[in-house]
Length: 292
Image 1 (cartoon, helix red, strand yellow):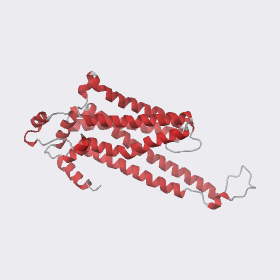
Image 2 (tube, one colour):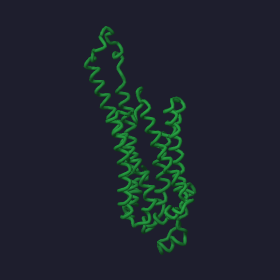
Image 3 (tube, one colour):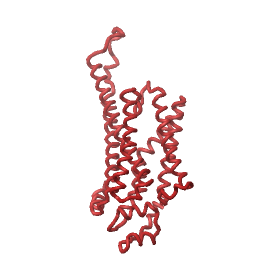
Image 4 (cartoon, helix red, strand yellow):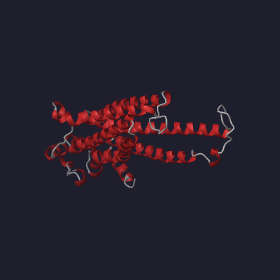
């Protein structure tokens, strides 16, 4: 947040549409997650039953719908759950969009011009994240599967979904790591940090798959620990991972054509190739020690 003003000035000066889009979405996703965490804490605190709720008249029959206070409390709880689910859905939409856009852009987008790459990446990423959003919304609001909530009646449907979801993501990232050994390796960037990024996400998704599988099998204690570890690492670490891998170099270099410079870095050009590309504007592109 401290460096945000200087980052914005650099984005405006470079007129890099792709980097501006990534930077904006990264901030939006972080803001949504912070808002979700704050609201979840507030709603949990306000939703706690009062002391007198446990001292009702035991002579009431089982068919008694409850006092007006109970009905209002139940209605508020349902509204709170709906609000939290909506925030969860939009936060996950943003994260899925960012994950998909990185793979799509680096798969073919960087071979195009800046605007073409941006439009193509946005279209494909929105489609992928949109399908994911719709599937989760249907499960939550139509089938009543508590994907993001912990309830006594969660059942096996929740963990079956997350097992399949995390397994598919693991297979996608494993396939990306294998691609350099195939004839399709020329379509991938030669930059090692990209493959480290993929390896980290593969490890997180594989861990989440193990955790959800254990929970599905009934191993609640072990499964909860493993799954919580994967979830905490993903939500806390993914924005930082994305920034360090793809945005840090952009903001640390000085060039009259930062977007072209960024494409060259992702394509893995050596110093000679970069000098030929940028001419008199060539700069030292040796990555910081932390990124090597």
